[in-house]
Structures are given as structure tokens and as C-alpha cells.
Length: 386
Ligand SMILES: Cc1ncc(COP(=O)(O)O)c(C=O)c1O
Image 1 (tube, rainbow, N blue to C red):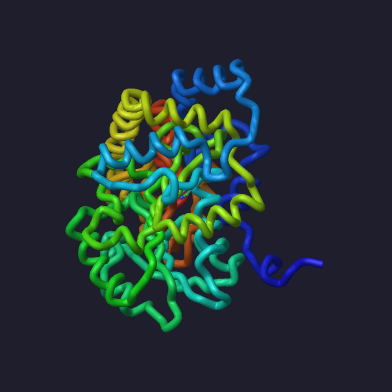
Image 2: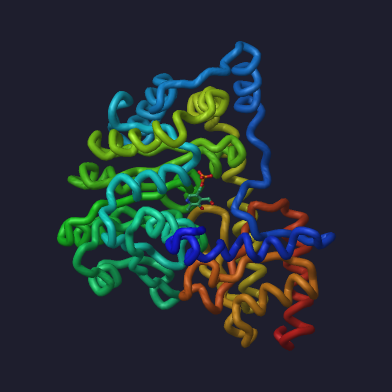
């Protein structure tokens, strides 16, 4: 009854693991990729008022014009990036829908997409579901988990249409400065690739300014820029994001969106307007808190000899567990059973995540402290480390 394409799709490694966690008591979960903050009050209030004022209808398929205008002004002011709100911006059900629409809009059967690994779990499935073929770009600790032109050149095969970039990266927290992006741009141009740039963690960049790929000279015409409200504004449950790109691509995506989704919930769209217009202060406050936690977690993990780089963005660290002699899944399972701390095995993000785990520091400081103490105890008992 089920199509082969869907039957062969593996369920998300994160979900599989967290089905185990559900039903266990007193677990400290450092697993899920979502802020521990609730949406800032002014944004929630905007949602409440939207309902009070009777905003209960469909909107334009592309999304409220007001929101598209605000996004366009925001990107211009923040990055000097210009998108026309009429034709080059589409409001989507989270960045997730944007990714799916892009693949369905651009791929012919068997066309290939370059996908960085370790990387976000949905990139390969949405490619496969759209009839395309993922080609993995393996990154590792030897290159600080960064893509470089050599990795792209070596992996490139004929009939490759696009490359996905994701920075700051989930799960490694790695980001790129302008110079590094310029290097990547050269090979992207040489191979004539479209760039699908998932910059959902852009506002959570800690050590240097975030550079959208589309701001590089000549890159905008071949870049599809994705962003959303889930992470920086703590709005995961509102399900809202946006895609900006060349008119032709946005219009093709809008066609699919129009027949499958119609439009994003108007309440979420009104709240998103408030987030961009008046969300700066709460975002900065949350970011400062994430930064504080990052310092703590990185220091503790390195003390425990679970070596990790200092992430440059997002709210994840990706320490090596190789010193324990355990595999990623084994480590995560044993830690969960012995100490009730849930982390994600690195292999959930691709085979090159073996030997690593992802820890999310979108959890309160008290929980993080307790979790690190439990991990220390686990290492002492299980592996004679420390
Ligand atoms: C890199 C990345 N892209 C996209 C998403 C999806 O986010 P949204 O809630 O906007 O659909 C996530 C969520 O974890 C993510 O980590």
C-alpha cells in the first residue's frame, strides 16, 4: 500500500531515541532542538489580540503583505539584503515547509543535492521525497566540522542541482565568516549550483556578525534564503518561517504551497510581525543567556575530556565521546539508563556523527549543572575516565 520511496525512508533518529525518553521519569533532556523559553510576552500578546480582533480568516497564499513588507525591511536594515515583498518572499509553515517546497519546486527526478553532514535530519528525506538524490558532504573534527571547497569538489557528481548550506549548523554549532563563505561561493559558481541556505539560527551567532550567503556579490540570483521564528524568537509551536529568493523560484514554490497549505495561520503571522518589529530586546536577552550556558557547558565537557569545539552559534555542542570507547548510540543509551540524561547520538545527523553526541544547551542552567554532574559520575563509573 505504501510507496517504496516512503517505505524506504528511515524514521528520524532523534524521534526514535526520544520515544524511549518519553515515559521515563526524572530525565534531564538535553535532546530536543527547541528553546526552553516561552515566546516573549509582547509576541504572545500580539497573537491574543489577533484573535480578539477577529483575525480568523485565510490570508493571501504568500502570507500577509504586512509581514512580507516587515521581513523585507528587516533584511534590508540588518544585512543590506533586498527582497521585493510582492514577488520574492513566501511565508511558510516553519522553515520545514520551506525546505520541502524548494525541493519539490526545483528537482527533476534523480537530480542530486549536496547535503552537509553532520546535518539537520530533514534535508535528505525532503530531497528523496521530491524524487531527488542526496550526496553527502562529510565534515569532521579534523576540519572543525566545516565545509570547504575541496569537500564540495570531491563530492560533486554530474546532474547536481543544488547545495544546502546551514549555518550556524545544527548539530555542530559551526558557522562561517564572510571570507570562508567567499571560498565556498567560488566552487558553487564553478559548478553552477543553486544554494539553499538555511539560516534559521542566524540571530543566535555569538562571536562574529552573521553573513547571509545571498549578500555575497553575485550570489543572490542563485540563493534561496530560509529563515524562521522558531529558534531566535522561541516560537516553535507557532509554525512560521519564510523563504526569500528569485521570483521564478518563489512563484513555483507558491504554486505548491497554494494547493497543499493555502496559507500560514493568520494568528501566527500577526505575532511574527510583532516579533520582527519589537522582538530585538527579548532576542538579545535569550541570546545572552545561551552564550552564558555555552561557556559553562563547553568548559565542563572539556574538563571531562569529552572534547568539543566552542560552537559559534545555535544552541548545541557536539562533543567527541571517542575517549570512552563507546559508540554514539551505546553512549546515549547507557547515559540515559544509568543517569537519566538524554542526549542525541551523533549518528542521528549522518554516519560521520559516529563518535559524537549532540547536547542542547537550550535548557535551564540548573538542569545543565546537574546534567554535567551526572555525566561526570557516569564517566567515572562506566569508563574509569577522570
Ligand atoms: C537547521 C534547521 N533547519 C530547520 C529547522 C526547522 O525549523 P522550523 O521550526 O522553522 O520548521 C530546524 C529545527 O530544528 C533546524 O535545526
